[in-house]
Length: 254
Image 1 (cartoon, rainbow, N blue to C red):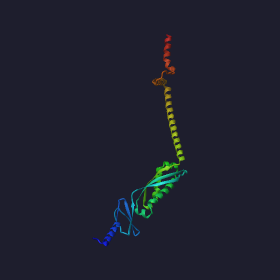
Image 2: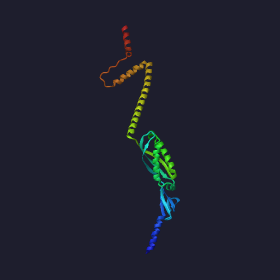
Image 3: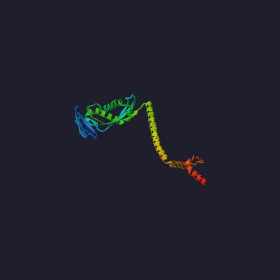
Image 4: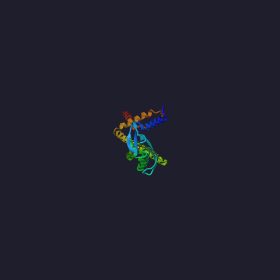
């Protein structure tokens, strides 16, 4: 049997061995500090540390999705709105992310919030609502430039929701209704213009061919006759009766 001293040595040895071995996943890196000095980043896989002397800080290299809380923004045309966003970023230099900044997650969040207020304060409300893609690209470019010294790569920034005051929502709804009414009137006017051109062409044809008017009149009679009416009164053009009048005159002369 083991003596108490041997058991103590075994337990201490196991404790030291457990603290000396680290296993890092594929998406993790270990930043090693030896007596306070940066040794570098290691991993993934099996990492051996010197107990008491070495200290390791794990950093994930996966893409982080971070919500940017709603910010009160005054646009360039003096409209107060609440805007929130989402930012996607990842660590590309694990050593800088630990050494260059105290808490890179918190620092990135603060930079995103201040940049969101600054950029949106320089645009008008119409641009904020219609040119969302351009604003997203500008936000991504600015935030990425600020986080690059920390070893952080910002890939995407998206403005999610823009909360407008009630009076502004009503004004926009009225503007949209007026725009739809304007388009409707323009379309109706264009239709009337095209119809007038066709009518003018038809008048020219009828003017050069008088019989065309009679044929159109007969067609109208045919269309009306299909309706279920008991009595229909039509004015008959005198030209239709001219052949009968001429025949009667000839017979009277005989």
